[in-house]
Amino acid sequence: MTARRGMPDMMPGIPERWRRLDVTVRDLPLGVLLLIASLLPALRGNGTEIGGLPTRSADVLAGVAAVLQCLPLALRRRWPHLCLALVSIGFALDQIRGYHLFAGTALPIALLCAGSYLERYRRATVAVASLAFVALSVELYRRGPGDPVAEFVTFYLALGLAWGIGTWMRSARAAEAERRGRVAEDARNAERTRIARELHDVVTHHVTAMVVQSEAARYLTAAPDRLDQTLAAVSDTGRRAITDLRHLLDLLNPDHGTDRNAEPRTPPVGRVLTLVEQTRRAGQPVEFTEEGTPAASTGSADLVAYRVVQEALTNALKYDHGGRTSVLVHHGEREITVRVGTDGTGSGAASPGGSGRGLAGLRERVDVLGGDFSADRPEGGGFVVRARIPAGSPS
Image 1 (cartoon, rainbow, N blue to C red):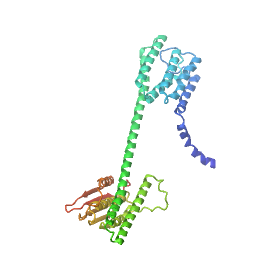
Image 2: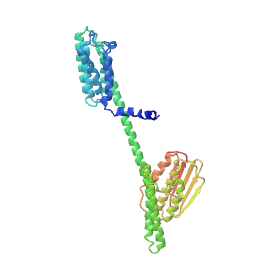
Image 3: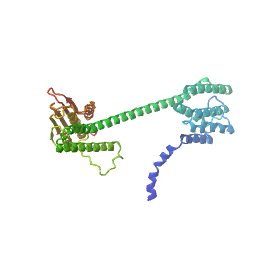
Image 4: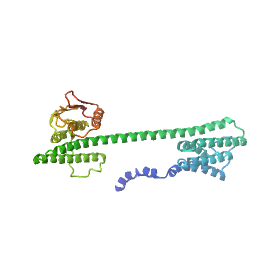
């Protein structure tokens, strides 16, 4: 029973080991098969024939012609120039001597592979091969019964078709490689954008809160209790930043998160209240309202809603610090609605400037899910961020 169970595990390894072999080893069997077929009595004299020369009995030179036409096919991808030259010599010997071996089938194969794999001197190869065929045709016409020239032209066109097919295969392979390169580059760019967006969301909010809290601590030296609370808030914010960065690293590298004692990550919907409390400790008065019941499965909507609240509160700390801020999260059956606004009574003098990437990134996230996003500045001051995020999308 053990041996039988092991057999299916061994089978997938055979193709893999075959692909690891050198390309000349993998290309050799075709040439060997053609050589064996050329030696079969049933196929003797039934190969390619141009020029009308009578078929001659096989001799030592027939064996040489067969080997020259068949075995060089092992080089058709590694050294296509050498393969085409040796096969052409063997074909010329085959036709001039009148053996008409089945091995003559190797010439169009060599031409097809040369058209497909040659990277340099392609035009020179076509010119030299054409001149060589003209010389062979003249010699066969001189030796033979004088078959029509059209026969030689037709055979030349057939060989040209083989070369053309190889050229088309080369172009198709290059186009596919270019397409895969573009797809890979687009994937890398998308991944870099996603990483930058996640870093912006995670780092900017926590660092902004820490900056605001530390600025406030400078004026609390006369109140040790309040100073201790503020510094504790800075420390707590820093620990949360480290935790979020660890989770981000876990997403980028699954092998990174091996610490069993690490703080478990709460679902984003459950962390909105924690986010609000953290912002309050930074000195921002926030009124939080949550309506409805979160759905059991919302796809990416809950994470996007969390990011909207996070970015809006970060901007509140930056540009309207101390101003009254309201956060409304409404859970519907098919969507999550978020509204975050400030009244413009605060100050942004102590906050670091922004780059505008946050709101642009939020708009992209919401658009991907088919929702609506807006960020406005009312006439009375402050700002209002609104987002409608359809639930259930796994994007």
